Amino acid sequence: MEKLVIEGGYRLEGEVSMSGAKNAALPLIAATLLTAGEHILHNVPDLRDTRTILALLEDLGVTWRRAGTSLYIDSAGLCNFEAPYDLVKTMRASILVLGPLLARLGKARVSLPGGCAIGARPIDFHLQGLQKMGARLDLEEGYVQASIDNRLSGTNIYFDIPSVTGTENLLMAATLAEGTTVIKNGAREPEVTNLVDMLVNMGADIEGRNTDRLTVHGVKQLKPAVTETIPDRIETGTYLIAVGAAGGKVTLTNCNPAHLPSLIEKLRGAGLQIEESENTITVSRPGPLQSIDIKTQPYPGFPTDLQAQLMALMSIANGLSVMTETIFENRFMHVAELKRMGADIRINGNSAIVKGIEKFKGARVMATDLRASASLVLAGLAAEGTTEISRIYHLERGYEDMTGKLQKLGAEIKKEKE
Ligand code: EPU
Image (cartoon, rainbow, N blue to C red; front, side, top):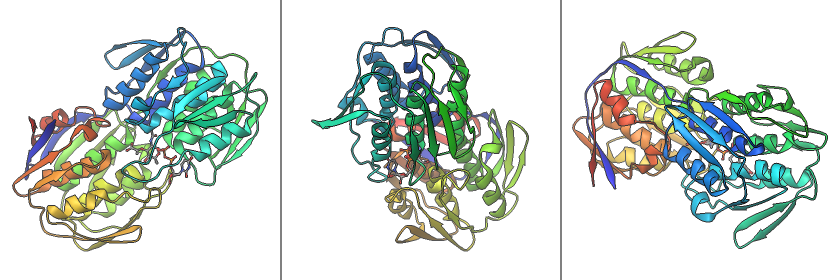
């Protein structure tokens, strides 16, 4: 196992390019299962999670090759319909193959994901939606077994809470269904829109792009397409916050500021200077940090995937910040680790009350999940002394070459064997 060693106190300066979005790439890769032929996906990050879903597709009989950031995926050889426990347990997003497999093959067997570090994370919306579309579902030995006789049937689906992968799964399934499916109160994260665009390029008939109401008129056949993965808004947000924590001035390239409306305004309120163009953002910290309050919400609200990173920043801001987590019930695992570095944080129900301290102090800490790990890196950059972060495999699930990118900006950060 590897650990990260960070010597804090170095300002970040320069320019760094953002990678393609993990949470967009995963459904795009799953969507290639919908029809045979060579699909081309550009700007796909090379991460543990993208490798996991490609390993899963390979298991199903799909072939693929990577050239730079492009993936060439051919699902003509699809011959298996099972997503095994060993892969699903390492990545919950494996559930994204359920809708496409069922739509294309009429059957699918997918291991049920268990709970995870950030909450129980059920998949009942995915299953109820498919059932409403006519699928028979059985639960056997921890697997959900789904089948249909002919095609899925269009129906009305209402999400009690907008689920990102739930919307994506049902959207993919609906493209090949008989008749029209209307998804109400669906997720409208930019990653969902990226998938809508890919499906439309493949010949799907979808109305309501970018809204919480998607209408899908099923078609009999789709065709392969070429799709560009959107830039990773969570990676972008993480680097913006990193400059806030460490100080300095950085330009992020290949990003899309329009996908971060809430974060950018909040960071301005915290005292950062931010200039946006269509696909770059320049950020600097001209003066002291001010506390701000946030509440996580579905898009375009403040993303839960940036809550931990912002908490690291608020820990060293002037004043008191209230951070409320409304999406996942257990997403405060980073609090105990940030406290080991001197943070003053109290949890009250689903809120964290963060009282700014002057400086973090370097310590040995442990990463518990992907975004929690990122918050510890940011705290380490701002800290006095050395921070050692163990279990960094979490970080590698979702951040492409974070160590290299931060080194390029002048951070003292390196990987070492534990
Ligand atoms: N929910 C249910 N039942 C369901 C599905 C969801 O009750 O069947 C609840 C969840 O428990 C949660 C809420 O609905 O309270 C929203 O969860 P959602 O389904 O939107 O989460 P997800 O699709 O499993 C994706 C991202 C997460 C991100 C969330 C929220 C991917 C692959 N994952 O998860 O990303 O936090 O949306 O934005 O897109 C990450 O990248 O670190 C990460 C965890």
